[in-house]
Figure 1 (cartoon, rainbow, N blue to C red):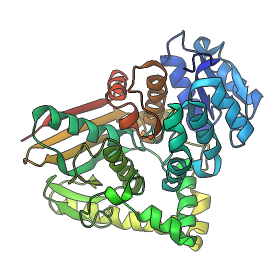
Figure 2 (figure 1 turned 90 degrees about the vertical axis):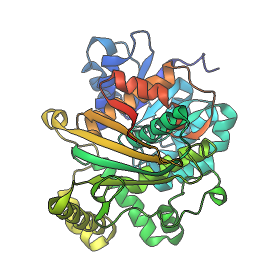
Figure 3 (figure 1 turned 180 degrees about the vertical axis):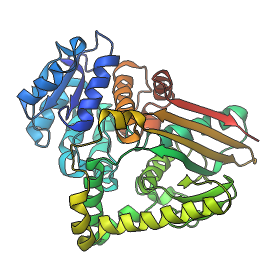
Length: 409
């Protein structure tokens, strides 16, 4: 199946900021015999990117295609066994490509953090992808690989120990240094604006099970809204505050549970927060971040505030310099409790700016995993955990990231 494709892997959006970082990662880490191509709308810029990658990429073909159109998307989907795309905002620019890959049986990976886009692809692409065998894998960067794999590994550790399904599970960001992508900001603004003006979009964005394949079958576990105020969490032993990406990542993790027939458990409750330590200092830091998060949300959602701050924000296609990317990092702990009371912690950490250097590694390894590894024969609109799971975790460990689940009590 798909062995007649010209390429093994096609990177779409190779001339954008994250696209160039991903292309450089692939040039440095893809096997020499892997047939890699670069796609975009401007042939000269594509060749400039390719020529700047050095010898490993000198023979990579370039494909000039506007993948926002049906014809260009179909051309890209038919050209390769795997398509990796960095072209966002995805709801505005990505649906044609996802749809084309689903129909053509082409595996697909992206970096989306847009709830409404994923809902679109579930509705429009899932059945076609199941039929064709295509893996349509969203969120293969900092949104949402650490979350999705961190919970999966905790579940697998508990399953191996026979300590029962997961119950209360909390991802805690213990340290993070990095910038915010201009593309991420643009995507967020577009989504929040649609939710502000469209009640149905607002309902979807607010639903903690927005990505469920069977919404009626999801458990009723009480309030599962994302943390908005400072709170001392006795389960993790520290003060916690809002984590900006929780509203999206939690939906991906819950979809992973449902796609695996609720393997994590029917009483699985999941939350993501930032951790600030103990005592008065921890409480003060949590309160400050909660206040800052509320201001940031207002700036993204209220037209008057957005008009004031937009000139100060990074633009799509831009990002920090090499020194700033290299100085970034993230450290995460996934705290999971099981039905028998056993407790597990998955340590997830990586060097490099999470949204740029770290994401380029995650997306690059996701593309390589789809192209090279023996994965379960499963099609549909999937998540990193359900499409690649342990194979991707192994790849990221080999690339210098940490994914380690351990029992703590």
